Length: 289
Image (cartoon, rainbow, N blue to C red; front, side, top):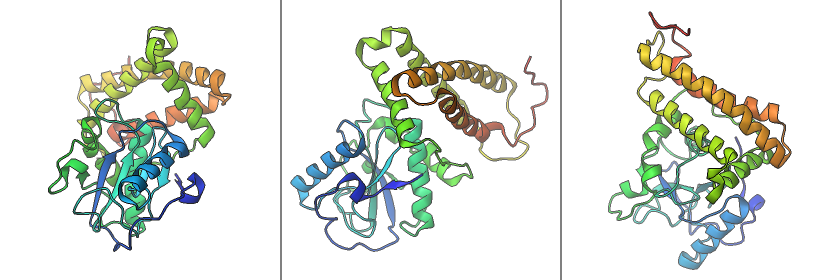
């Protein structure tokens, strides 16, 4: 993964307020409660931060729904994100309102990758989120929204794992994929077959994630309960069918290569599946028939 620089997204205002010590002691997850994605959405956050506090964009990093990571203020500079702790903490902000929307898989992987990257580079002391903004001492806020707050444990487990979090999709492919998804999810489109395909795929992946959350990642010789193993097999077959249909829709909409996109989606699913079963032999008594 890569981090889109301030110059690349078109930063226009000051880079934070003052120098801040590294490594940071804490890292908090935030949400913007704004809409959109891409550089324009990041510049909107910069406008808001400048108008409210006068220090340019308030957050250290910003991640949109496609999983694209944007540099906010420099990691060695102080922003305006977590009251009373801006000097010792850094902020990762998700664009959107996560009281009403769900984090995408791409965002979850991007946050986990960024936590690892920042720890390796000495930006913060740990590869774990300290919590959501609401968890900061003295905070009185719903930020980062209930739907993001509930994923913090999953993000931290992923950041601490040995999973490959790299995303081989190009920005154009990723944007085309998410444009199709967002278009099909809006309004009445959900009543039409393409919208139903996307919603069904999301639901299946959510069900798979819930199954994985009950299993210990990376443990050799792990044994899965028979009913859980069969559920994973059945879900994976359904997701494979939907994945092909989704990729073809993205090709028609965005001109991307359906075969490549299918491979990327299946790669992500395979990496999820590896958390639960890649290091395990087939459980005794389980059958794929």
